[in-house]
Image (cartoon, rainbow, N blue to C red; front, side, top):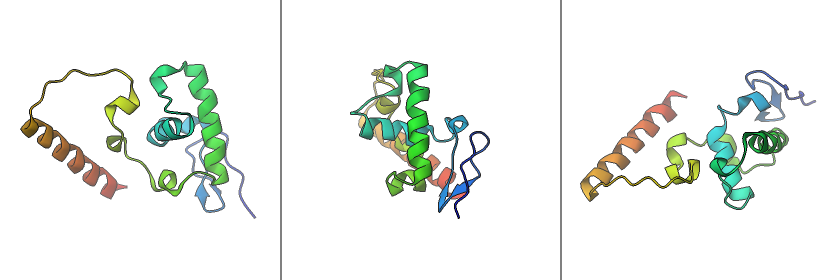
Length: 120
């Protein structure tokens, strides 16, 4: 028998083989939500919608998550460092970097991802 998802809390309840989440897990699952918005909602970005709309869409995301109907990559976890800055915000930053600096930035991003992914 499946356990019911918690409406609030840390998201520690399980539904089948899926760790259930609640609407209060917005920050914990923000990377997954951002990717879901982009893929399922035609490239939609958080910066394009009001907070009330973001809450409504996150509630839909939570229902899909708890039903286990999302792609496996969402349950495996998506690191915030895996999301390009232009996916988190539509703002176009104008940093001037050369190829060597760009390579160092990518290396640092990869290093942070490895360290944080192995810690969880």
